[in-house]
Image (tube, rainbow, N blue to C red):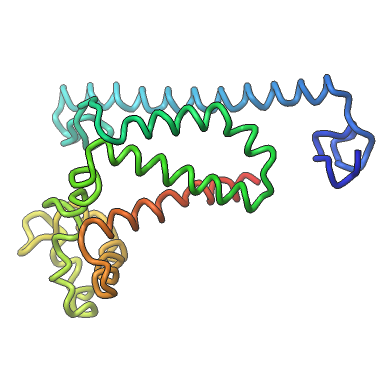
Amino acid sequence: MKTEDVTPTDTADGTGHGPPAPPDRIDERARRARRADLIAAAAGVLLVVAAVLIGRVIQDRYQTLFAQWPPFLASWDPHLGPGTPAALTMAVLVVAYGPSLAARLPWRGLLAAAWAGSMAWVFSMALIDGWYRGVERRLTTKHEYLRVIDRFGDIPATLRGFTDHILLDAPDNWPAHIAGHPPGATLTFVWLDRVGLGGGAWAAVWCVVVGSSAVLAALITVR
């Protein structure tokens, strides 16, 4: 086995430069890595479940969270739709072939595949509600960014007075998402509109493409 073909965990001394480790040691390391992954995933699931249960108790008892499904501002509505087959297919493919594919791909290929897979997953989930409701209309509702694009005709002036419209009782108060985020988020959609990519469809595609790149940040961080 050539030195460049091995990783540090494949050698007896763990440095990548010593003699190859015995197969049973490599298998044991792989099993430990899988156990660690499962423990991390289970911990994440338990954290979400705990947040939901505790949030539900607080909301039912004190009505202070103003969220229908704490900790999410959402409603429990399981349903099927056009994107369901694609979402299920993506889930099966990633579970069945993701680990082996990741082990074979070069680093840049892994990043590209992970980003593409992430985008496919998000799009398929959004399309469960169909193109119009799940994608095109999503950022055009009363709480969303696209409802205020016309108020940014003079960007510097709007930014100077941005904080004057945050509070709920302020004159011409911003919708929830605009008030709850720095103005840079809204400016992203203003600039998209100005370069000819206005409307809900382009805004949604932008969010999916850019948002799904978070998987790249995770991979680069843990490399």
